[in-house]
Image 1 (tube, rainbow, N blue to C red):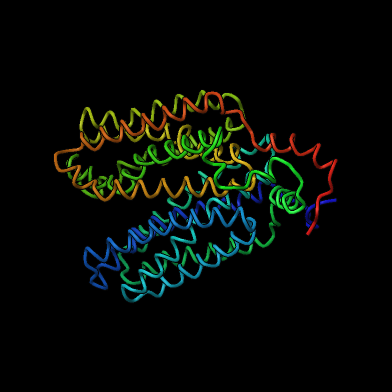
Image 2: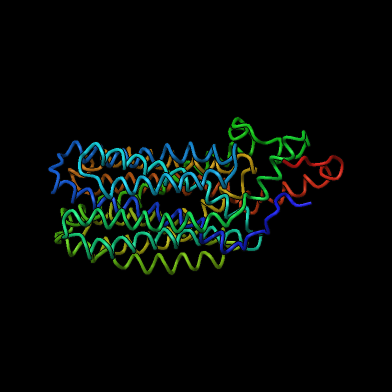
Length: 431
């Protein structure tokens, strides 16, 4: 007897529709960065208000990831990713018509919370619709959707950035329209059969791995605790490089590379094709044992990326080498492999809780560094990039120590193997 009357959705359809959470997440961040400059000009926002709005977006994304992750394990993937997409559309529409700072603040909080809450639930939806042969590939595909969100906003910002009040309307209107299309697509996706099975077993008192491992304290014990801490450290410390380049790359090049703002934008362009090629390559090896070797190579590249700037300064040639190294590192030793590990290492009823917690801590850490980055750059880029080098080395090294023995562990297989005897001895209650 099936756990749902609806036919199982096609994994790639689930990956596209659910993975668009990464698209709107990237579009929200990059779109808001452009829109807030326009709001400053047309509404006369001061520096404190700009900081409050940007901080509200970042903080609400982190809080949303925590809340959405836990709700996804408690009440199911489908109701949460439906509610978050509705909230995201409303938040985007609020920002489309924002005409004062309080309205901008409300819209930023809604948009940030919704996109943050949506991400961990959507990733688990994808992983639970996949098989052991394509799970890594489908999760890796979300990196391409993240990149698509960035590229789409670059194009839109280039076309409408100088149109005044019309620019934020188009930027956030784009997010609202895409959100509405995602919502329609998600209505075709039933609840995760894996989550339904775990809930049914737990309600019926069937003693299975996935039914019993539901308490948050389990995340801090035994192998789960080791993996949980490793992923927090890995995700948070490696992300500091990407977040710093994303937030202050132009600032660094203009102030220490002796280039103009328009030239600084051109310097970063080679990162896009390198990242896209790397993400496609990761999708090819994400479900194979060789992926850990790629992680090791990518990890070395990631550590070298800030190191060359720390040693040789932020001239254009050095910065370009750093970006190329970061492109290789981000393909094989960054969010792609982190998301795969986060899906495979935790039990069903804690999967989105763990992923949401990792994302939240990652974003809070990035926000903390961003708040002091201009101060660290006063004496030049060496201190900041030295800190980034040490942080990335610790994050990559910690992940290497833990996952050199845990990389091939798959909780989906463990749960399936452990539940079969229990399912034969006790009936599952269907609701």
